[in-house]
Structures are given as structure tokens and as C-alpha cells.
Length: 210
Image (cartoon, one colour):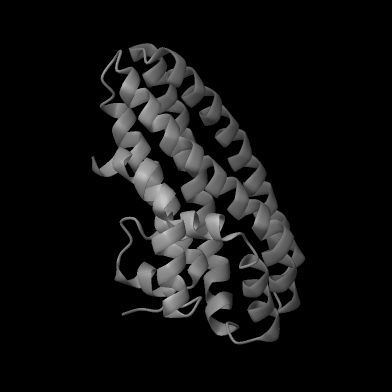
């Protein structure tokens, strides 16, 4: 089984959810307010996860990566891509909010167009970031800087951590699951995912799994 960083495993979850939204909006039943509300619930989680991840990259990951040799020029490119993504995210956020209110066919199509644009710019950025930075994460994973970065990312409430892990492993393959579970001791992972991930499994997972 090929090794991957936790960062790449998180990226897989973003790609997965974007595809889920595109598929769901493509098949949206006009006038179905219940489905519109379900998608709004899943969207709120996705929106939060994406914003939190990329703000954390700027504040925590980039300084650590620069310390282990990644150029400031490349990190500036990454931030520019984040800004492009943020603009597309804002458009999708607005479109999803409108769909939640109306559940109309026209607004479902508008949300679909916004989501496809978000998918395009996000996947383009994730591909670029992985091509440039994934080898660094793997080569420098035992360095003090990258270990300290991981500890900073781990400084979250149990509720946020539980919701994150439940979301990230929902549909993850073996490589992604291994990368996620490798970050904390197995008993702690089981507790956080089991107890504090309950909210995700109760409210968000049924949107995709019935």
C-alpha cells in the first residue's frame, strides 16, 4: 500500500464531496425542499472543512514547509490559488443558500454551475499542491518542523476533531484511512471518531448514504 501524507488524504475527501455535490445537484428533484435542506446540511460541513483547512495551511503549514526548504515563491502561488478557490467557494455558498430557500429547478442548475466551477478550481489547486508538496511531506515527515506542524494542527476541540475524522474517512480508501489513523494513537482515534464523530454520522452522512 502506497504511503501518503494526511494532507493528501484530506484532499481526497474534498474531491469526493465535490463529486457528491455535483452528482446530487445534477439529479436534484425540483421542488424537493427536504432534499434541498439535506444538501444545505452537507454543504455547511464541507464549507467549514475547506475554509478551516486552507486557512490552516496559510497559518501553520506554509511556515513549516518554508523552514524545510519549500520556496516562498511556491507558497505565494499556493496562496493565490487559495484566493481563486475562496471566490468560487463564495459563489457556491450563495447558490447553495438560494437553493435551500427555493428548491427550484432553476436554482438547482445555478448551484450546479457554481459547484462545477468550485470543483474545477479546487481540484486544479489540489493537484498542483500535491505535485509540489506531497514529496516534501513524505521526505520530511520526521523533521522537527513537520512534527511541530502536526501538533499545531491537532490543537482543536474534541468536537471539531471528531467531526473532521468522521467526515474524512467517510468513503475513504485504505491508503487514506491509514494516513488519517497514523496521526494519533489508535485508542484515541477510536474515541474521537466514535464519540465526537457522532454528529457527522447523524446529520451529514445520511445525506449521502440514506
